[in-house]
Length: 523
Image 1 (cartoon, one colour):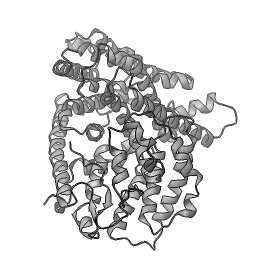
Image 2: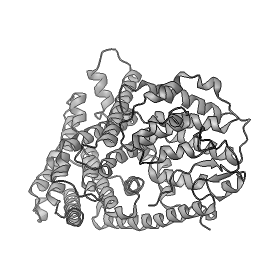
Image 3: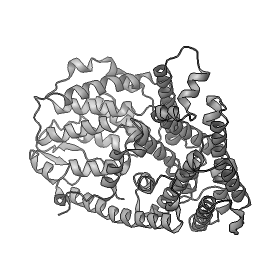
Image 4: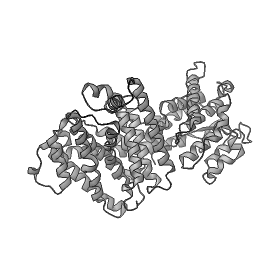
């Protein structure tokens, strides 16, 4: 594993704290926290008095149990909301801030539409944490420094955008050796309590970067070998595509899954650009025909060099992935991977959108969104390389289609909200424009945008619920996680602006994947 778990701090029970387990924060006593972390107890954690009566520990237990798929209610948290948290908060006490931080993190685990209690928690605790960060009178050294960094990170990277690889690097850097030496002797790192833990995590991350370098170099060669770099209309986004895979599929043994994800992400981006600006209707229909026949080998069947390049890359890549599924699934899934990128699932949608735009047709918002399922070409093939052997036809099951629909709706709306002004000037179809056309008369642009943001939140909650609590699903949890991973990537790229095309994100991608950690962390 190339990630360092979230590093928390506690006071050594021999040097401070009551030792009676009544305070379950990470700072004072580990006893009730340990109970919440013990998987054998499961949902019974929320029935233990010493857990449910302590705000920090109760919310921690709630968050961990819900994240592990337990059907836990948010009702036990109600009593903490009813208390006047703000009036009882001592801004100089890190225990209080730790409690507020745990309340905030628990409030992000909304998976039901009627969990208003968590929404209230989120709004209230976020405001408190922001106020605490703005307090210039607080000491900015030692433990205060670490807690401030943790609070700042949690606010900047909410749960639905907090990619594992990025989180791992932050944890290592924030709890690095310099910060550790700044702490009082009475504080220590959970588990090992010395610099060896940080050094081990840093070395692990460093080894991961070596793998990233090799895999990305291979992806770049694959782009060149398939002459995709000659397609002048296509955005060259191989770094982004690889980053989206490496930042979520972090285990060393998942190399095949990462490369499947990255390659299909590149191909999907190319096809999207082709249908958007690079190809004619005739070329798109020709490409669809080639995919339907699939046994084409004669260049004369391709109406242009662009079509030949794309079809050749698709064909070679799909057969390569199909051969690899045999080792992972004990059966060749080439035919299904072909279906994933066939006319029914990808090209017909690209063509339909292009025809809508070029014929000036105006579909309904539901028609528009229901035909945006390009994410299946990235996520579904990767499912075969996660580990578990999937039941026959599992990837075709309605459970998977529901996950895809929720993911695709989130992705499309996120993209369209950020690209609305640009696409409107270009005369392109957009969910915002369609909602204004077909929606309730008199709605302002801001009202439409706000409603679409609410829709994104609803879809994201439903997606998280299916991922976390889909124990009866045909897909194992490891596979369901891929849909949440993609959702996190999309939220990271499109939550604030169109980061898929921004220079800031390009720099961040390079930093996370390739920039070495501070030498002090690996010495």
